[in-house]
Amino acid sequence: MRVTGPKTVETPHKPARILGPEYRVATIGIVLVITLVAFEGMSVVVAMPTAARELHALDLYGISLSAFLIASLFANVVAGLWADRRGYPLPFLAGVLLFVLGMGLAGSAQSAGMFLVARAVQGLGAGPSVVALYVMIARVYPMELRSKVFAAVSAAWVVPAMVGPAVAGFVSEQWGWRYVFFGIIPLVVPALAMLVPALRMPSASQGERSDGPRSRPLAMTLAATATAGGAGVLLHGVDQVHLHPASGVPESVAGLAFLLYGLYRLLPPGALRFSRGLPTTVLMRGFYSAAFFGVNSYIPLALVDVKGFDASYAGVALTTGALGWSAGSYLQSRRDGEAYRRIRLGAACVTVAILVCVLCVLPGVTGWIAVPAWIVAGFGMGFGMTTVSVTALKQSPVNEQGANSAALSVADMLGSAVTVGIGGALLNVFGHGPDQIATAFVVISFLMAAVGLSATLLAGRTR
Image (cartoon, rainbow, N blue to C red; front, side, top):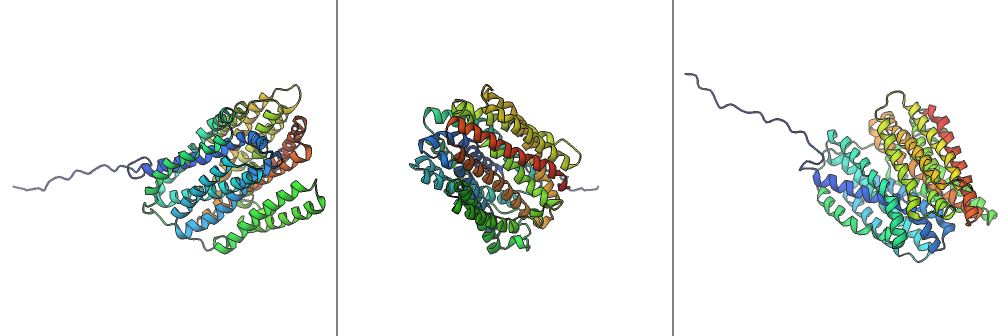
């Protein structure tokens, strides 16, 4: 008689899931942290008009928004280098602590100067937190899960973008703008509690360290310092030109020189010459952000001070822009064809929407026209910006994807910081009365439309 051994039953393979037992806590923690950073970014713009009036700081309106972005730009580069060499837990924890400290300082600020410092501290914290989380995703999650985690990160921006402006406007009107900042601090605790265990998780991959010029810590730190410092000096000089041209003009020139030196080191070779392919693709991110946020940051101020909107109603335009952004991102992922055409179409949508938005401050025209205009602008951003990011990574060698991701972030933040700061300088030139704010908004919008038109014309060089 033939004796056979026991039959073995093969257990079906269960693919890993981002919300499976192994990664659930890490995923929820990451989404919570990104949600808090996104809510801060979407809500502060709505609270700014009230805060600026109370602190007598309308002359610092633009630079208060730019200070966050400039500080984040510097911190992004330094934290990325730190995470590559020493791991992501320390830069993440340091970033969260600085972010919370900045929120507390902003909420308790009694002067314009203190509020400006608080915004910079917030930026120094938000930058490392987000960069460290991105490195964590690359190190902890296996390759097949990373795209799903990044999709969850993108989704984490949707709810703050839709409800953040309205909630911030309501809180600002009912209890005061300070509670917009104070209210976020307690929410950091559960997110941090979930991520602390995840910070000890073993790495799924360590990645390959690049040995290119953009991987040298000292050189990149100096370049980041030159870029951030140059941007700050440039914006301060531009703001002072109409008051003290003898000092404002040289200050602006010096700031621009430092800024260009830093960008030469941080961006892909040939970017400042708009070389075809990757260099221009990276710059497109800056053009998009410059045009969109250069107007987006001043819509609440225009609607509140020119049209008499409550802060909660003024936030509706920003909310609808977020809806358009989500729709554009979804649609571009389902479109085929050459990427440069999608980049061009997105830039054209942003440009047209900015020109329509000019009407919202004109006499006899309802301010609500900003709502459909900003839906179109948001659609253009979602459609074009996502295409830019995907195209840049496709055009990058594997060992330079990290450096080029950082370059995209630098272009993004710098574009926003410079145009928001220049908008603030123009606001100071024209004055702070309703008619003067309306005039400044029109000029700002036409300048940003010119930036959007430039992106439309340069899109072909991304091929």
